[in-house]
Image 1 (spheres, rainbow, N blue to C red):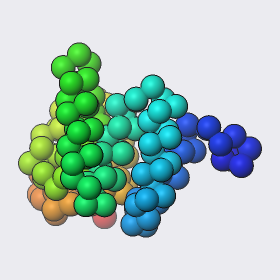
Image 2: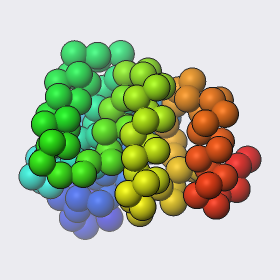
Image 3: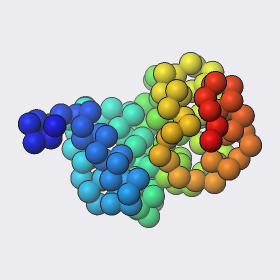
Length: 139
């Protein structure tokens, strides 16, 4: 798809996420930075980008993006903030924001069981309880 349209936002976001899941962090960051710019700084893409920076060990840029997302969250509901906290290894905040997403009936919560994120929160009983409440298989 990117050969046909190198600015196809959805493809950039997905390929960036895929690179991150393979620990190909520079490729992921490049794709997600481009997606963030093309999207007009979409909070969801910023969350994925912050998570990727955090997983790559670049905590400064991850925290800067988190501050940007937090500022947006004061004006509108921003579920992607959980991604940023996941990249920074803050399991408590990840679970707090996932619970908010559930309470708000955020559509992205349907992907919770297959979210490619990393972190200690994945072994937390509260995470598995949330998956159960959403109605997803917990494997």
